[in-house]
Image (cartoon, rainbow, N blue to C red; front, side, top):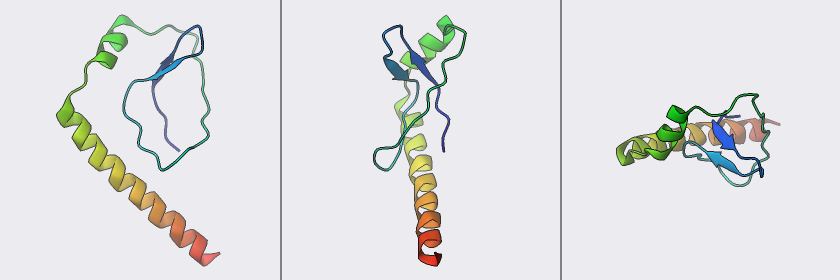
Length: 78
């Protein structure tokens, strides 16, 4: 399970603030907070540094592989 920061508008459109790496479709829960986004959060959501994305992609790929390996081991033992 992963917690992801996002923004939802009055029409229900969700804008995720950072890349999400998952293996295939997943269910998701959305918790709507009682506070609007701050202007700083809106500006930060627009800024994307490509080098940061590459590093994040590597970390996510490693994390997902560990989870997949752990899940495969659990299934093999059951």
